[in-house]
Image (cartoon, rainbow, N blue to C red):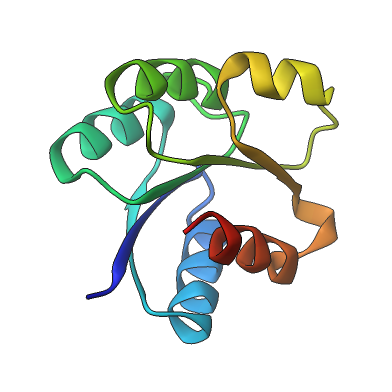
Length: 117
């Protein structure tokens, strides 16, 4: 049975690119959210196996979404996929299990997702 991954990014092109790449590379079904608030709502309903969050999103930031999600589903890994340089201690304190820089590419993200799933 395929694992379910929730991708939350306010950029539809990023969401679509990540979704297409992950579904080609591994046995996953990807769901999408356009902001942090939508990600929390969607995750609480669908219970994904892994969540990918952008940091800067409208309505609720990736940091706020990660904190809310860790309270309701602490066992689900959350990956921060961002353009921003964020100190690793801050990343861990917020509740992210891993961080991948967008400039490092989608291949690094897929490796991270594979490892965490």
